[in-house]
Image (cartoon, rainbow, N blue to C red; front, side, top):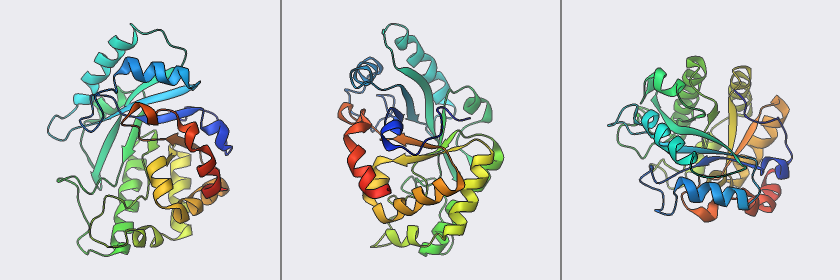
Length: 248
């Protein structure tokens, strides 16, 4: 489902941050307590945030239990910001998911990644070419859409976790406009949003300008996600001008 109204106004999109990690994610700073994240979001004047900790392949369905712990802490904190407690979930191959569907459905917000290729259990294409990686990501995203598991795609199309090429942008250049538009349309029909992920947008501006323009043409819903692992990244508005330079 979509969690806010469709808009292509960057300032409006920056009122939401739908990708924040807490201390339940091992990669997050120790300062990322639920209490301090919520207080920071209120101080920044955000309307909506989503807490999206990583799931763990060796602790299947753990994010469902984590959600209950986070909700208990939220009850002790006065806050104005709307908080969704979800997870950054893993589709590590075609029709291969790290958690059970019951776990996914227990979450407020299901942010799905299809390109964590740096993780040991992630499936890579048999042929190591930029085009093969592009085809792999498209096929996995298509399987996620058909599964009904997702509310949003995390850092879609991003090649930053692929270490096989000196220039990882060769992978994003391998996607055609028609392929991007077609998969976006499928997701839109399933009410799955597309993330404007801060590290991805800033790291590959040429591709994400193209991505944003195609998304507008298709009529998709975009979510801002800073992929925050520290408190100073909770407020997306600090990146607004750079987003405008890249996407408009």
